[in-house]
Length: 572
Image (tube, rainbow, N blue to C red):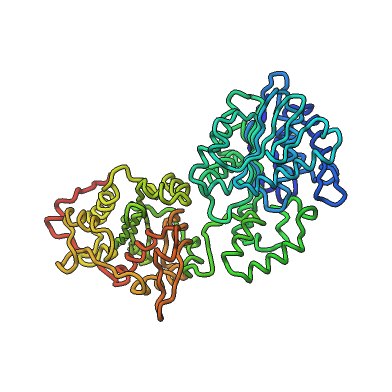
């Protein structure tokens, strides 16, 4: 049997209101039988208590057909086993989830089977359980077949003994589960949990011995840049949809704006919100969307971006708030992903380095800032290090930090988790030596470090032959707080006028989004204390490098001995 779960023409499909499910049900009879049950269930909290068959649009049935129609009853095997739906808020996601799982409970043949709806919080778990229990209570036949236990948030099939449980995320609850059918609701919130990957592995582990089973991931977009398991699943199912990954066992249905509409800012027109709200005119009102759009727009960039994420499925690139650094507004437009450390050194006539090092519960940030030989634009490349202590002490950001370790810019990853106590110090110094050996560091004021920073960095640099500027050397102490005002103002102006470019690294977008501005007298100040648990160390390193580059430095000329010591590359 041949089929594909890739949907490379999804942009045309979504604009023409066609199905985002690329293949017909593999087993139509199974799909029709399950859909008959699904359509008969009642939506109690809607006027008149209509059935799903009466109230829902075709996109709901397409998704249900794909899930149940992938099951071959002759072999008791489901050929498409993982499903992912990303859809805007208020499109009936939790109610649809409850109906899908209730249908699975009714159609399931395995005795004593476990069916699980896993939610990140107790409140969200109740959002799924309440409509499911109401569907049973609204149907006398279902009341005879199914036993609802409100106190345990579970529904039992009296004939098979199979149990549908709705639980909030907890390792103690999902550990050792043998669920054949699993639905994970609001996956974006799991992306913020440090232990989510292991928890989901436990919850879905039972599918190994139950080939008839499935797992469904449902979510809206995150109110912050995607992270953790949510980012991993979103990226994977996008790649499956786009045909970049061939996985016939996985199917993603993702309601998001086509890339051309993102570039043209078509997503900023409420009239286009039907694209990510297939229930527009049913559970979603265009009038409500338009009113909220104006309200959140007036509230500032932070609330407005959150509104676009939740109701337009627009992925947030940075976590912007009203007190953000003004340069954050222009950050994403200044990305040039061709910039790596190697290309920066090749393109630059002079380079300054900024370092911001903290303790074991903090990040160590490095910024390499070059001045282009031809345009004199500034080019930025950054890197960060963290110790395992950070992952333990800052569990709220641990998934995001681990994501950064997977992103690479040239030879280096954006983030390194240190395996040795001095690994960050050693590798920072290695890069400084690499810049020096390229003949691009100024003789004085080439490396800027926080005056109150980590002594170990200075000691390591001194051991590599660098010296402090008071001795005629390269290392310069940079005062922090309001003293960084020239770098803060200068960077934001260069980002806006297009004379500063960066490598487009996700870690820097995160740090820039975390940066909060405080006015002290007439100076702007950005400090770690203002940013809370959101780290900004690589950004502070950038400001240190900017302070030095603002002095219009020249690279130290190599003397004859240094020149002769450098290897000569002969081209053919």
